[in-house]
Every structure is written in structure tokens, then in C-alpha cells.
Length: 416
Image (tube, helix red, strand yellow):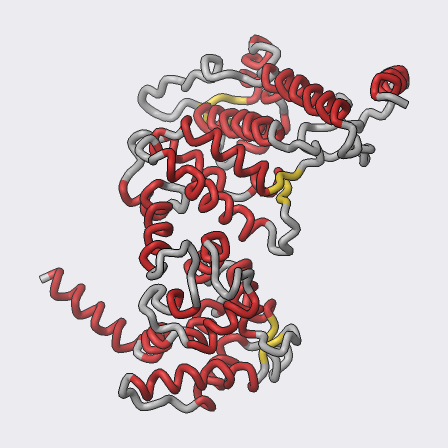
């Protein structure tokens, strides 16, 4: 059966399911029943499906309010308020694109503590702006969802960000030769945190729900402060910083990092035992790490309070692959800290004391085992992991009281 016959039959069968892919009752982004996708060798059917989805998404886009229609209301004097009766009157006069926002549900959602039962007009406007932005972004991302299943693969997200770069004024100064490295840097953050099982794809709904896209699109602001750029992973200074560190570590300039080269990361005080585990568990090529693997490493160490980062480090600490850390595994890593202390002329600290402190901090359900969930629940995972893998981090922890006192003294001197 050729593709024309398949298409004719599909078009001849009426679609009575209101929750189908193009049904009216299903909100954009909510998955309908699983549809049979064209096979890889059905090139024309695949192309037809892509084109039909693009037309559908473009139609949805036209149904949204555009920039000209979203005019910021003028603010004079006190904050303007509106009651429910007038809210409904405005809704009756609003265009068809606005009807969905003038409902009792929306009014109730924005009604807070006003004694007259009114809502803020500016809050309502911001609500509409946010909703329109979410729909626009959902449609934009969906255009890159080749399979039409509500997911983006790594290559899909790479294409989305690559085509987004010219629309972000804060990235105007990037050399085109750096684009591929920038895209790789940006995409890794999404996949590191939103794809913990490493399936190679992310739900579009998860992308919209997290703050990463907000950070990325913040680069549209031509007057973004220097402080905001420095704390934004997606900014040009941040991306150049991360890639510049990688180049500085790559002493033999072969584009990869050996264990010895990676040992100079940060303050160069991570233990060899921990670095051994990094190269045992992470993807390497002939025993060396590429830029993508390095990005995961950096994201884990720079975000040690986050569950995804703790999961990454926990896997390295779980040397017996048992799903928990016991006294043996803690001792295995802390011995390396003790050895570094000797090398640097410091008196080694007793493991027994450190072990007791770790268990006191984490308070695991099982008094002899620390699970990943225990670490996350304790809100002390960043401290525990730092103690076990980094001499400088352990020294900072051991001298925390003296460091706090010094900071307070410095503040007092500044005040005088």
C-alpha cells in the first residue's frame, strides 16, 4: 500500500475522539491517546505529519494575543482596582481572544485581601501576559518536537536554542564560531536537571515548568545588569567562563581532559579517590573527558544543594553500588582527605568524629545507612559531599566558626 492510499484512508475515517491530537476539547500540550507514528522509511508520511502539525501550531499561535494587543495599562497615582461586575463588563467588550481571561475562575484566583472584593488591574494584566507567554513558548517548542509526542530530544533543543540566539540581544557579541559550544553549554543544563534518568528526551511541560527558560529568555533584556549576567548560566559571560576554564585545564590542547588535568579544577584540592570515581562512572573516551561530560561535572559541583546534583555525586560515592552510603564508603573517601591533610602539614582529623557528625547532620531513617533521599531530605547534602571529596571544602567546614567570627569582625570594622 503506497502512502497516498494510507493518507486517503486516514482522511476518510472521521475522528470522533474529542481528546485526539487535533481535538477541540483538549488543551494545547495535554497528551491525547497514543497515535501510530509513521515508520522511519515512510519519509513522505513523516513530512506530511510535520507540515500538518506546523500548520496546526501556527493556527494556535494566531489565536493568541499579539504584542500590539498586549498594551500595558497606564498607571497614575494609586494602584488601579476593579470589582467583579465591572470586570465582566470589560470582558463583554473585549475581543474574542480575550474572552478566556474574563472568567470567575481567573477573578477568584487574583482576589486576595481587598476589603471591597476587587482585584488589581496590573496583576490581571501580568497574569494575562504570563499565560500568553506560556502558550507562545509552548507552541515555539512544539515546532521542534519532530515526533509530536510532547518531548524534545537533545538535537531538538539544540536546534531551538541555536535559532533563538539571534533574538537575544545579550548574545550579540558571541562569535559564530562559539555558537556550537554555547548551545552545548545551554542544553546540558536542561538535560542535567530535567532528565535524571538519562532517557535522552525532556517533556516540554517540564521545560515550561522550570525556571531555566525564564533565565534564557531574560537575555532579551538589553539592559540586563552585570550581576544578573554573572548568575545566569545562559549568559555570554557565564558560558565563556565555563568554556574558558575547560580550555585552561586542557594543558595538552587535545580537546579532552585527563584525570590529571581535571584535578586542577577549582582550588585543585579534590581527592584522587573521588577523581578516580568520576572517570570510572562518567562517559570518557580512551580515559579522557569531553566537554559535554565536563559540563555535567561542573553543574553537579556548582549546584550541590539540588537533588539532581546530589544524585550525580551520590552515585560516585556509592562505591559498592548498594544504593546507600555506610561507614565503609564514608571512610573510603575520608581517608583520602586525611592523606591530603598530612601532605599539607595539617593534623589529620579523626574519622570517627567526622562520621558521627555526618550521621548527626543527615539523620537517616536507618542509623547505619545514608540513602540519596536521606541526603536530600536533610538539606545538608552539599556539606556532606564537600567534606568527603574536597580538602578545601572540608577545611572550610572545620573552621566555619572562626570564619564567621572573622566576617563579623570585618563587618564591624567596615561600619566604623
